[in-house]
Image (tube, rainbow, N blue to C red; front, side):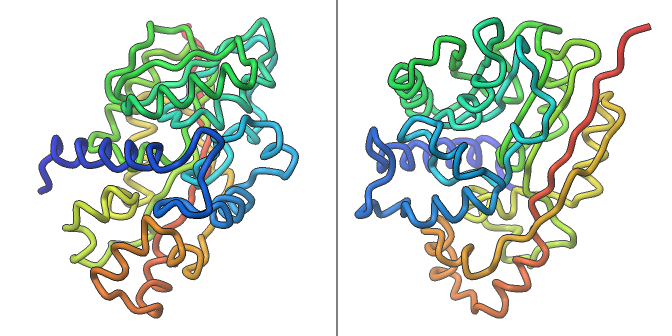
Length: 279
């Protein structure tokens, strides 16, 4: 069993380095961590339209998502939205466009550098209905029962206590509220060498759990009306070109055939669920 605090510290360190290596206007071509071509390809594969990618402030898309939870249609004008693991603010800004002046979007991230970048992006984009709070998604700095919609994009898989994340989402959500999540899950077990790798965990691979276990954690937290909105695989070639993955692929000398097999095991899952109205 991997040490949870060590994993959390490594995740925080990795994402601090990501934001540090991207400039205020976003990743540079020379960045050793993020390639703009990957970010554009990953963004489109994740389900963002060209129009959406143009609407967000420069520097808020770091190519770290695996879906577009804002596109699921649950967010309405005037809503209060919570973005778990908000990063540089991409999904928070898209949600802010929908909720308008009467609504509010709260982004929570555990990496101070990400919070700083997101706040800078909010100022740059003129977003007054978004705020970013430093905190862990297992212990949200948010009051009880005030959120209409909770969104998250490829972040919960990094948590070492996923059931607690869903319990916290339940706690802060109003009765009748909606959970909209894109995340990485497994269709079958990973090879042992990846399961035991903290580096693989940090890169969203070994942190992913079986699809059935993930869905059960959502239901155990108290959510109902659970729906699977989609499943998609990321092409092995794209995974191999992601610089966060290149490092581990090269270090472990994973051949393309094995990467393709792993790619077929790891899927981007899009789900929605509801907090029941109290009787």
